[in-house]
Image (cartoon, rainbow, N blue to C red; front, side, top):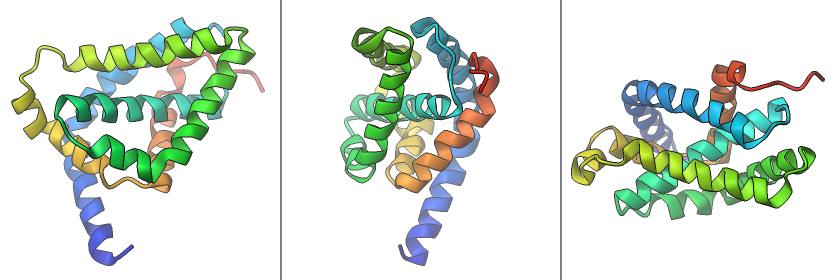
Length: 167
């Protein structure tokens, strides 16, 4: 990665951190509470990280689709292996709780529905040129290590809303 690319990534992430912080705070509090609805089992640290990563990925998908942006497909090209690992982690979480495929499918569907509801009713042109446009620009720069750092930071910030396993 060149110095120019690194600086461009830093600038995009800085631009999005202010405006999105408030939006993410409200979504995270709703989302983590919903995670408890989808699974009665406790969450390990890696499952909390996976949940937060999948929430972010789902937001990239929904906002990208709403804005008719190719960011999501490029994001998956770069981060597909990481996303698959996070999906596997959450699938194991549901299997451990005895809810297996049905619970995991419901979880993924609810993530997308929650994200869609969060932006519904907003004018797409305004949405896509405002903070969500900046969000997509930042997502378009994230690589696997960035996604991992982001998921870990979000998990650390929101861990108290999860029922933690006692190991």
